[in-house]
Image 1 (cartoon, rainbow, N blue to C red):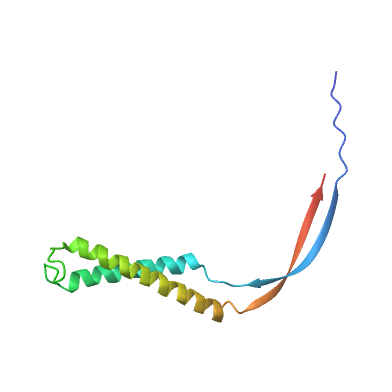
Image 2: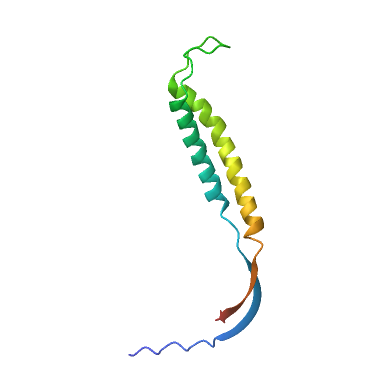
Length: 111
């Protein structure tokens, strides 16, 4: 006994065109990451090239070079992220102000 094919369901489709505004914006994560990387790099350079005394004059404690790097990295990563955010905001104000109109076609397929 042969199977009968299932009847096709009527499908309806409608096309709709819309005009949208596209605005370019910087990716903030990239700028914040670059600022954090620059902060770590600056902290590393300061730790290596500026030779401080071995004993802290305030606490009379001896800090290793890695501890000094950690302290300066905490400070300069925060500063680097802040500078990266400011640069991203400046880019958004200058480059992001350009908008353009695009026409998109939205298709809907119903079953």
